[in-house]
Image 1: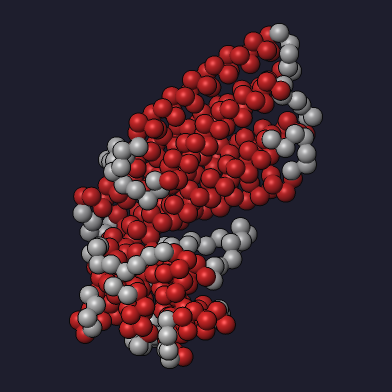
Image 2: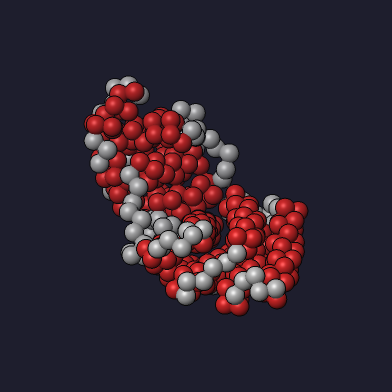
Length: 358
């Protein structure tokens, strides 16, 4: 089905609802871009230009097409998650989709999917500010919505965003580790700010999921909500370990301590394996009941074995006085933090694989 046809139909509907109004406002900011993309689809009215631009962005930048593969409820869950509409706004959007499904040649599910891509394109083309100093949830609405799948989908997307933040935090921590004595004060302060952000995310997502759990959920939805609670707790714990690593690195810098060249290479080795583990759970952040445990088992065992082996080798260096006691203790504590990050990544992998259901 032609994506533009659905967007054109949507544009004829009254854009009184707040989410669509916000999206239309964002699209107007595109200025000349709206016109050029609009002309690509042919002669359209001024009112339809923002929607034409959105359709063009979807077809070209996102490479998607509209289909009716998923059910209406799932589509509206995705609309709610992407647009961050409130409960009242979601009722308006659902009503819009159902009305158009009844009065046009498109089904309600098709219209729901069109609404989702409309919101996605607006966010893609006019991204919001990502200021660590100003905390806000990206996907969770201010109120619980009557459709449970929408609430859970919002929490899943928020947890994915939290995972991406934790992944960036880990990379920045590794950048500090490999800075070779350079001043990294700004990076260190940013890591602390990112850790504060993960604390807030854990609290807000968990609070939201607790409210969702009080609703009339199916057994499957209740299990998924519990797994998400465990996931955000593990993500916050990974962020705590990144902060612990940073504190150790700052202590090393402040005391002008050196870790041997061999020790640095060993830290890089175990850090690389942890990075592989984070990449694995990032890749499958939105998957459920997908067995990734064979890969997770290998990574977990490798990290544990490396920690034991490298700790043993470093104690030998300490005993032979090839490094100082202070730097040696920092090295051993860093190994422990890397292992703990691997443990929490393993817990998340179990959740993705469907092995952590209550």
